[in-house]
Amino acid sequence: MRDVRGSTQVTLKKGSADPALFELFANLPRESVVEVEGTARRSEKSQRGVELHPSRVSVIARAEVPLPLGVVDKVGAELDTRLNHRVLDLRKPAVRAVFELRTSVLAGFRAAFLKRGFYEVETPKILRQGAEGGATLFPVEYFESRAYLAQSPQLYKQMLIGAGFERVFEIAPAFRAEPSDTVRHLTEFTSLDAEVGYIEGAEDLRTLVEELIIDTLAFVRRDLSDRGNPLVRGIPEPKAPFPRIPFSVSEEWLGRPGAERDLGTEDEKAIGERAVREYGSPFYFLTDFPTAVKAHTFYAQRQDANPALTGYFDLDYRGLEIMSGGPREHRLDRLVENIRAAGLDPAGFTGYLEAFRYGMPPHGGWAIGIDRLVQVLAGLSNIREARLFPRDRYRLDP
Image (tube, rainbow, N blue to C red; front, side, top):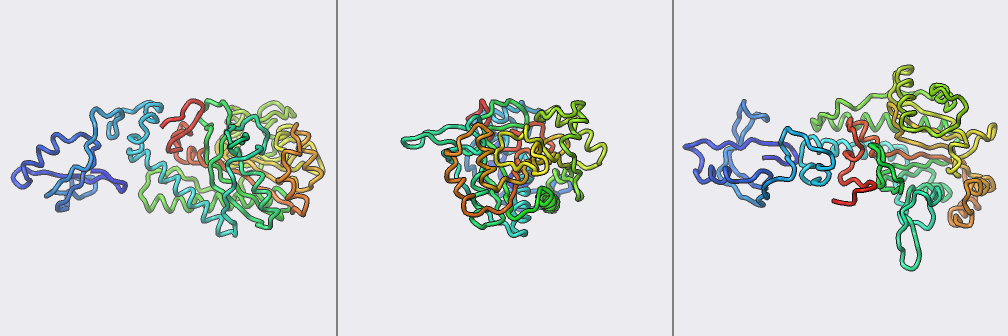
């Protein structure tokens, strides 16, 4: 028998058990739901050191046969088959362990943010305008007009800084209509967003990110250890400071100095191998992204001393980007200029820009992809395994 806490062996012995129970169990399909009452006895042969000798058995729900997906079978199944029959797949203890880890990650982050005086907020997911234009937005019919599913809470986070909240975070779904068929992209994903007011620069944000990551992973290690979750073995113990690698250095490592091109999957892997080899840290920052690379991100602040560079940075883990952020442009005139430079009309951002007309402090923030973080911490080959019911370009069911 199996429940959320584990498995318990039920033992029937001839001469002591009701003969009718032998017939019941012999004809009971696997994965049926039963309730068993009896006497618990020590047993060296049982995995838990105890076995249950039943006196009463109730069949609550009989499973159909054959099962479309094995639950206790040693033979593996293709990921598509697993996702097509996800309820059965989620019954596997190894699969459930991933979501126990995910729960722990979210609880750890919440504790770390609240400890530092952050407000947890909820922002709209149905928007009139996207944070980065309309190319990767899902349109939806909204009464007599058209709206879009949120690709990010970016604009609202900044507005809340202008409202005097100073420190906010949100854990919520986000949506990107990117036709990406990779092991690290989803169309619906969970984003952990944070925004901080009254910063002096990007280093303030990086230092805070380090603290949050270290605290969260320490929480996860303790929690998974208490639960006996085997995935605790893969949780790293990073030390601050994480290495800071300027984007220009990463271009040199890739053999294309000054190229100012966005990083692809293979680029990130190559940088990750070099970074881990040179610094010995699985976590590292890529800093000072060129303005040309972040041109679509109109809210990214350009460096006053060198406008060709932004203060933006990524946090990578062994060659996989899990976070991006940096200082925002808080000066209204420059922000409007950036919006126009990105090919967008400032008139479409009236509510957002109003927050900057009445006093906006220097601020910045970041977003962490929770699914990617769970993927790397659990050692999963595909990000779809990190979500209960993943959505991608082709999957809308179950």
